[in-house]
Image 1 (cartoon, rainbow, N blue to C red):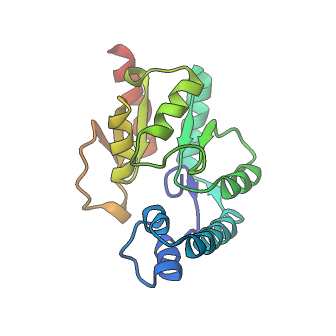
Image 2: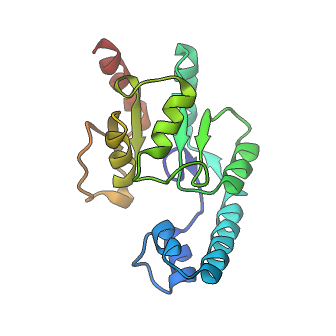
Length: 186
């Protein structure tokens, strides 16, 4: 969600430093390894920082254009995020447009597990062969592949050197319509 669909001030490295004192851990996996009392406090801190960033979030103009294109074609959309539901709701209110089905970390086992993708596909009534999972990190691609979806890696400056085994690599969300047309042709 952050960095792909939404422009956000969410600083993942700062969250990691606030909870773990360094940036060596993935947030969800690191917190889940903490003792219960520390885990509850850490989740509170994450939610606080996510909500604060959500208050200034804006939709990525390319995402808005892509969503308009998808809506004009009657295509279904969903967002699978490792963000919490509370911050997602703040973002939805702030953006003021239909973002489609959103699966937050509380709704299903988070990426890289395929659970959120499978949950979304079931709710949207779609199959993996007709679904494109787009993301800017390897967890997005791993989750999509494990769920049987086509995958597109959005290469951004943040992960310019990340090695990812996606079906497609894109540098702009506006490349997605062409990929969808390829998938539709089979």
